[in-house]
Amino acid sequence: MDFSLREFDKKEMLSVYRRFVANFFDGNEESEDFLISEAAVKWLLAKGVYRGYGLYDDKKHLLCFGMFISDRASRTLLLNYFAVLKKYRGYNYPEIFFELLKLFFTDDIIKEERKERLPFGIFLELGGAGDNKSFSECREKELNFYKKMGAYMTDIIPALSGTEYNVLFLPINEKPSMSDLLREIQDVYKEILPSFKDRKKYIKRLTEEVDGLV
Image 1 (cartoon, helix red, strand yellow):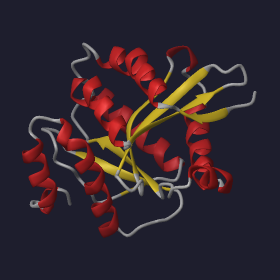
Image 2: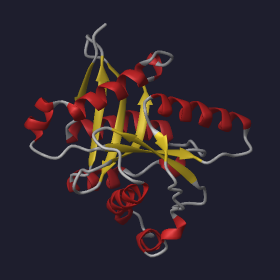
Image 3: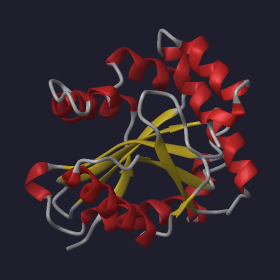
Image 4: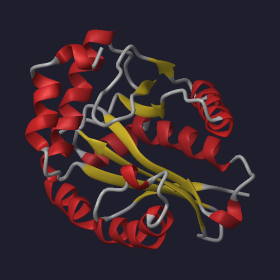
């Protein structure tokens, strides 16, 4: 079977959000903190910092997708949502997705077509360890998957909610220093936070209380 990776346009982004993301998180108490509103999605799209990619089979069926938030200069991406459609789970589609995504960002033809600087890496947020055995097992599985893809753990520990979590970095074109990564992820968060009511609280943590991130 042949696979292809394609970038969504804005209309497709909203369609995927409504059909899959919002429906999955709506009513899921354990995941409600991770759902951003449709208004926030539209706002990020209008700013040009929200993008998504879908993995398709040779029959043009959407298998899985990832949605990312970037800084204004598109230096780095932060994975916002990643999901495999229910009937396609259990296969190695996540591996194929990330391998093709890395090729997408390193392909000279793509670089020429886009006429912009492509991201040199992707930030991946990972929930902190907890007492729940099932959660810990899922976290370990997710961690091992990202490491297999080439990601590594950073020393960045954001404190943007009641739950702390770790941040991994998946290098594509460069492997920045830890201090550079801290600056890059702050630039990404600054694009997100104004869409929330308590933006001043969060921005203060990012720009003035740096110890809260390292």
